[in-house]
Amino acid sequence: MVVGYDWLRALHIDPIDIVKICKECGLRLTGQRRVIVELLQQASDHPDALELHRRATKVDPRIALSTIYRTLSLLEEKGVLERHVFGSGPARFERADAEHHDHLIDVESGQVVEFRSDEIERLQQQIAREHGFEIISHRLEIYVRPLQRRKRKS
Image (cartoon, rainbow, N blue to C red):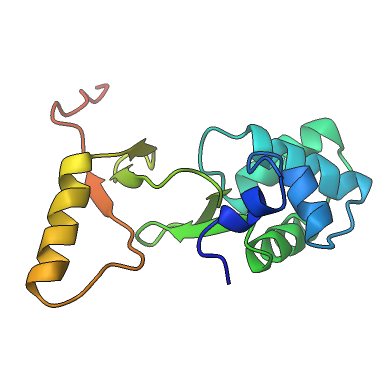
């Protein structure tokens, strides 16, 4: 079995092309699914189902929330999407083919900031080795709030 998303490259599929990935996974792309998939492909954030539904109904008002949930579930099952649950918030989704990165989650606004730190990656490897392990996968979520508290309107 090919580890990670190298299987996409082995099939000569651009990892960013979710439509092509869906076809290779045997997922039928109805018109509504295609809208959902294209919105996910364009997303630079981590939308939840309700946000994705809001975006999708701007393109096709007939798309039901249940269609969003079923499509997200199928895409996650096929390894096309990765599900994240930050704290007690709703499940949010991002493309599974993205380069490895970690997340800062603003507890006040819910904003998710992606970042990558070679130093953190090196330290994690070092700590795992010191304890007799090798890392096969990990997620780092850091919950934050702004340093400067926002002024509240009186």
